[in-house]
Length: 483
Image (cartoon, rainbow, N blue to C red):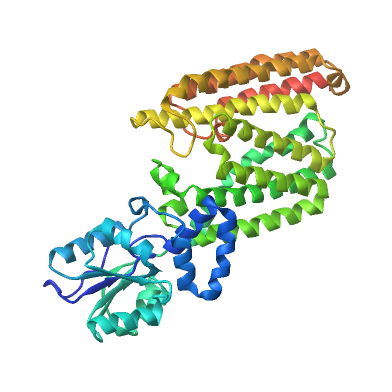
């Protein structure tokens, strides 16, 4: 809760309000850069050369090439509520920001509370002492209050009558008190570590257990060297996956902020600065590639291919109906390929074909969930995807067909020459077919009833029935070996 100012009467001293991290829980320079990265990656990279002309020129350069919807930004709701009270009392409000004027003006118009906007203009970067000088020139020494949130604002507060500290830790408020009087405060202790850990989505790493499937099907679980290779591959793919998740969340900012639950993701909600995503993704990818090279050059190439395809999927491919689920299923199958490459276990065409069909069914199941969510909200188009509410029946049909095709492939595998080399009683494996069919039917029933609330793959690792079916399948495989 904000700390109430001792002065109870309406205050007519002008109030200057910072934009980045104060009025909004994000930074417009990074918001612009991320959108330019999605729109034109090459242009985004080349834009850094403009930094030689200064930060103000850089901000203007990027702002001129993208458009940000002010209505879709994460605002500081508590601060805005207080600003409305100040405005109603007759107080003059000025938006004073280091962001470019082309970004700041639309936001000020959208909020509808500000009498004026002071911002960077391509020549002057309005931050720190430059902002203090501009405000002092307009309102006089100690003739205004200023609301800010970062250590940069310590260069502004010495020229103010009072400091309004927003969205910042108690330590910043104490430092501000050393240079001016503290007025209203909206303190929050940011936990970037927790937000960053959440953005990595470690719960999704369970998908990379697929890399161990070749070890299981080749009956090499007791081979310590093979297990070590598979474990290192698992770590590498998990780090690469987290790098993709960070980039995906950055590229999907607008779509996430329109989504009922994804709006709470760290970047979309403003809990985590966008620059953490760009730097974090780069570091994670480098570590993942380092581990991959320790295994083999081939595995490093597979890891790189996984990152490139995953990033392409997040950037463009997931907007194309059907192609998106094919690529999503392909990424799961690529994990299987990675398991073979990391361990040196010979490839199984049957296993790869089976995985493609089963994961295509699960990918379609995920899309059906999203379509149903849109329908429940009386929407028509799945934002950021290529589907509409009318596609639900087609998605269900294709999903069930893909699941059944996986069962058929498993049945055909039992009669192959390859199975004889691994199993003493291969016909017993036919028992796994109805078990798999039962599981596929069950998860589709749950999805159609609206009872599937997780990613289907993640659901399998939480559902006790899935564990029972999985245990029975492993038992069938064990008996089929004749041990």
